[in-house]
Image (cartoon, rainbow over all chains, first blue to last red):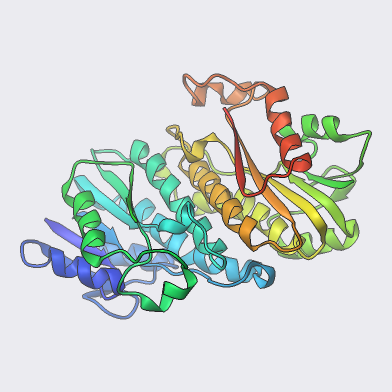
Length: 198
Length: 198
């Protein structure tokens, strides 16, 4: 299976890549690292990226950032960061990638717990994660050729201790459980699923 | 109570405005109609709008559009329509409006059933509606001075027969039920609620 991992050197990406490597043809990608570079905030960059990857069987997106901060000083420009990166970056990987993916292929995106369970500074990422969850359930019925799509929605993960203070009372999720969610999406048969790992 | 209604001449807006008029000071707004004009896709226009409205007690947003069409021909540009209008238009009414709203005031936004219950051509609006629902639950814990925020999420409404074919098997929602949702948000005490009317 030819699997593209976008964000392969990130906190989640490293572990997902390690779990997939060996038995499959892996193409790692990142904004600055990996086999191929892609700027997910640029549709031209995404188009050029897929021209280089060629046809593929699975895309795993563990990428995208957002703004984290108090609402009373949050500006439209702050908010746009998560919209352009974590939301539209991943959506555009699918809208453009649907023309390159093989039949019975799969897209696996990354949302997160804040869609349902907000924290004080997380309005931007709550919005982005809720958007991604709903995109996945809708895109699942629109994709053709038996192509599947799911979102993995992790809680705060054990490898991101810098976020623990911002998630009071959240029990960090083990990386093994998170990785299992991605494997379930890539190798399972489900589509339109939001796989909650919290 | 001084209440701003953005989108006051739309299908929902007309009925909501009729229900609120009389006992309250109403400011109607629209892109081309109403007491004041505002282009919700422009942050400059929203800033100028609030400078004209001055302090207020409630903002009801029944505005914003998106793209409706098949996924296999949906482009990033198509998708951006709903992001810029129904999503960021309403989010920016709150991000900017939080600095103009009176203590104990309220924001009421409009999402819709597609967040949870997709239809074939609705990927853009599913995404936008899911984003708005999650924004509201997150913004509710970030807003200060006891300001509240809720989203009304209607199903396809009886006054929009042009959409019935796109929502097979959906039972159109009566306008009275939809209007009641907005009244619950403006005059009730709830915050961070997604009021489902389907």
